[in-house]
Image (tube, rainbow, N blue to C red; front, side, top):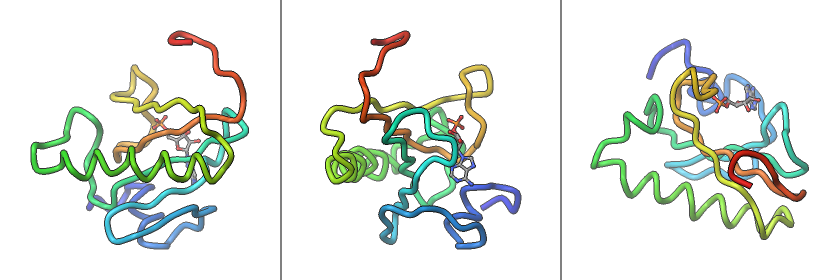
Length: 113
Ligand code: AMP
């Protein structure tokens, strides 16, 4: 776990967040700069730098992000939502600890919409 990882600090409780869910493997919290009425991040506690660093042993954990995120989205009133993972700086990844964005609460347009 790198000392300078922002999301590791959040997981350790060193930086406060608006937490939506936590168990022993996963944490979810609202994005600090929301791009939609519903915008939160689902993050595995294991430090994995990004999608391209996911190993075979992580497959179940990464699948869990989807299940946890869908449940929270529904609780937040967003039955329809978009899932985004950024991989690498040129794709817009700012935090190098894998995280799943969930965006909803408005009609989503853009490159894939
Ligand atoms: P990415 O660009 O995919 O790496 O996404 C990183 C996300 O983390 C951005 O949407 C940021 O707004 C969000 N973020 C950065 N710092 C915090 C924080 N302290 N609490 C919640 N979200 C954060």
